[in-house]
Every structure is written in structure tokens, then in C-alpha cells.
Picture 1 (cartoon, one colour):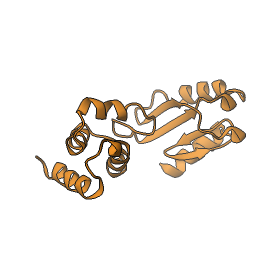
Picture 2: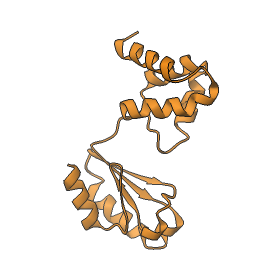
Picture 3: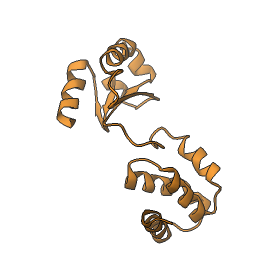
Picture 4: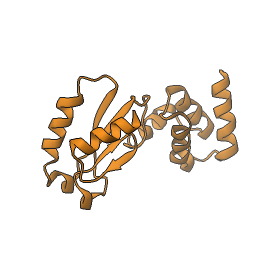
Length: 146
């Protein structure tokens, strides 16, 4: 067992009792610690909670806020909700994809409703939501981030 695995195991023991109901809180904790859910960390979490790794993986992949791969340098998440769709999200999505799709440091995701309907269209850049998004606002946020 690596030092990192031992440290995670110790932290899980200190923070979470060995109950199945602690799966999501433990996954959120691990995600916060590493920025994503490494395979080995899901194994350690499953061991601690007495849950098969397949179930841990299933839970991890069921929630859009949990990632099983490291974050790219820039993550653009476009709200796919009805409110955002009604204000021409498809045009904005097309422009974003045309401008950024060839850049390997930028990942573009469509996500379910972000509940920012009054500010549609909504786009998230590295965790910061932009309401009434347009390319100027998105580009400006990427410069600030980047």
C-alpha cells in the first residue's frame, strides 16, 4: 500500500463510520481531496465502507459533479436545461465547440439543468458560473483563470 493510500485510509477511518450510507459523503470528501476520484481511492473507499468497488464506481459515475478522471486545464460546462435551451444555447454551444474543440487543454461538457434559468444561457468555467453567457464573458473568464 502506498503512502497516499494509507493516508486516505486513515482519513476515512477518522471521518466516516463503516456504514453504507456514508458512500456519497466519502466520495465527495475524496473528490475534494484529489479533484477527482482515482481508481485506487475508490478501492480504498469501498474497502473502508465494506462496499464492492463496482458499487462505488457505479455511484461515482451516477453523479455529474463527481469525476473519475483528472480535470483538464479548463473545463467548460454548458447547461442543457430547458431555460438555457430556450435562449439559443445550441448557437452558443456551436460557437464554443468551434473555438475550443481542437484544444486538448479544454474539455466541453453538457450538463443537466444548473437551475440558473433566470440567467440563461448558463456556462460554467472551472467551477464559476456565468449567467447570460456569451463568448466575450466566457473568454474573459478563461483569461482570468488561465
